[in-house]
Image (cartoon, rainbow, N blue to C red; front, side):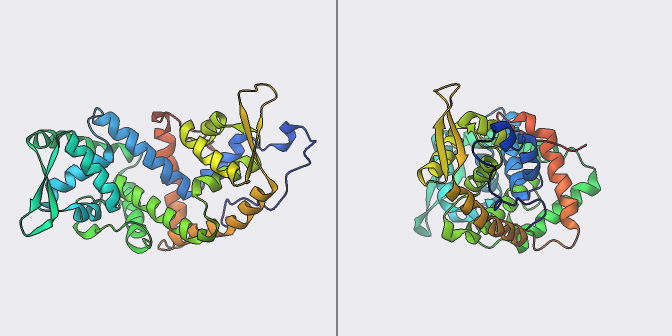
Length: 330
């Protein structure tokens, strides 16, 4: 089992025991998660998006900003080329391009050499906006690493770059050598997250469960009886997203949902025996996916990376609408 893992094979105490005695305090539950790179990288990705929105005055999203910058830097790049420059899949790129076209920041013209291709280009409004995009994007990179001096920043970039270059099987293609964002921390964090999710999905493929669903099983195994809103406050996701996660698990019989005796409007969730069994069988595969994600790091380098990820989350979580319950050891 990976360091900081959870032994899920241990059954919960008897149902008749008082709920307070059967629960692990939520701060102790989340102490497990703040040692997990996947959880921290996901939180940093949320932070990066929230920070960019503030810095850009909500003129565009971070994903839209990356596409705009890639269009400016890439000359005659089509949808596929832009996807590879930004490290995202082509279907997501298509949606972003559609939104940018609707807002009037880009226009697409037919490639005269290949009528099947369209070439996005900045409009006059896009040209006027691109200076602000560059400033906000640069400010985001500085703000994300504001906790660190130059040596620590360089070390963090080097560790993330190695993960991005050497551990990327299954993640969307990212042509780092020609990407205008190869050294941008926000992209490197997201790339490491993509790689971790790809390895997790591959390792648990026969069980068809997402990392968020697995995390929900862990939390509700250790601290049963949370409502949708309470789970959102613990895990740090918006309640509507949590509703989808919890209801899918309940439909599969991995969670049980009961009405709160104190408030009949609230539904409380806990793992079923099947849910605990499945989580126990997933845990070794989740640990294996983490090992694969970090395989390019040398001995002891994760111990350098982990506190830097934690420091970023600690500093910036209050910028999130749903920061979650995050314990920090002094």
